[in-house]
Length: 326
Image (cartoon, rainbow, N blue to C red; front, side):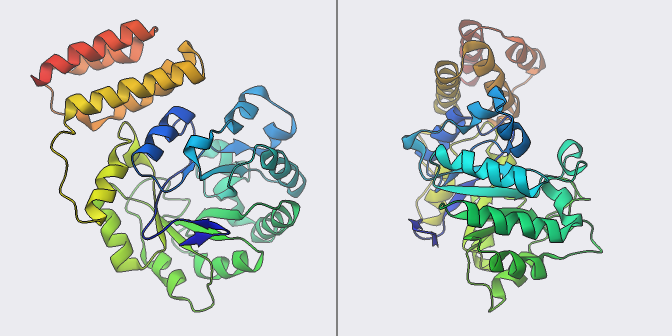
């Protein structure tokens, strides 16, 4: 499978762009464990145009994580075109446009999935961004605004006609937010459309290697994108790749090994960001990591992890946790 000139090989699995999740430390680990492509946290076009420092910092990428995409969102043609030009200078491998974020602070202002209520503007933005940059431009969106308005079969053709290089479809409507189940049937319908020539990437409710296999086998997608199931679990990409290639799970990758991975993520974030924000970025993953599930009376330890303010304190708590598996 190819996007532009980027060759991904057979059955690629991508890390989804996620706010406060896909920082550089997490991306580097996901890439090491087999993610075919990673994305930065999504960035506001308006904030980029205004040169907001915290947003500009999200454009920092490393050659070690390539291929890497930077995703932008906004609600005006002018801001999105200017933001795309700024992003191009950061030299990602592609630029992705977010027409799928359902949260109120984004969609409620007309950006992200909010664009599904203004298709002419959505298409204008896409067309003008494609014309403004030399990098491949891709789009990530949802099935429609509500269950009564599943527009993705038509929208996919319109987006392709705007010149995008690939389309990621999350199998929910905006009104669903992240509730209920993702419906992959409209994604399969898009993929079966003989007019569709660009790669179609499926997203939504991918939680296990078996889910990835079913997505390829049952829905025919060109690639799979995985989001929330990666929280505190960057090694999931190795589990997926082993499964897809017929290898048995590696018994040496036990909870103690996984704890070392999370500690490495902490160290990378502290080194590349700073101690305070590096710890904040890592806390979300520690809180969500499946390795701590099933430990008796773990609540107080979890609270202590989420309150730690220094690397030494947090690493000490994690080392105490390791003893609970012995």
